[in-house]
Length: 298
Image (cartoon, rainbow, N blue to C red):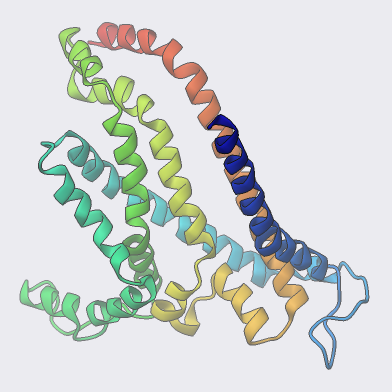
């Protein structure tokens, strides 16, 4: 029985490895090679070696697009964290018979394609839409307004699409939290804020970091939300890469921009893994110290 299990495991690993090599690694290598080639007049790529594609990415226009993408992704991540942490905490500490229904609220958006949900946002954000009518009914505005084709619309679209990816890892981290530590902190005389700062926040930090990564990385390269809600006014990194391949037909430049994005994501994932290892090494050792600090601060 053990031999069969071992053989099945090796076969599964071989199949998955072959699949990833064929459909992930090989296309990525081809894309990387294309960054060092030139764009042809008749064909997409010629065999002439060049570094011009990376030099063109130093253009102020691309650097501005890169910065705007980082800025919007960062603001979206912060908003998802501020909205997702309280909801995840309430979800993790609620009654067990209520948790499935609250989890259902988080999972329901996945039942519909995100592209369709983004198009549905137009009904809410357009002039005379749901949001505009609501603000008029509350007396906050005098005439209909439209948030379409603004960075606010892109921000709302990003936050709506990626919020579940923040809530789920936070929920997993908070659910594992030993509530006896919170009770011990209260018994030592700590306030609710001190307990959160010294106990809850450090122990749930892996969930916070994981949620931020799951929101920031997709927001950095997502192209259809800015395309639909931002229109041609706003060019983010994902839109820039898409346009180079499908509109400008400059595959080497698009490949270079895509490679820069991939390297950036790899660096951020490496930093995330490093922080998780550091947190797992120091978390248990510092717990007693945190409790003592909480007691002294009280």
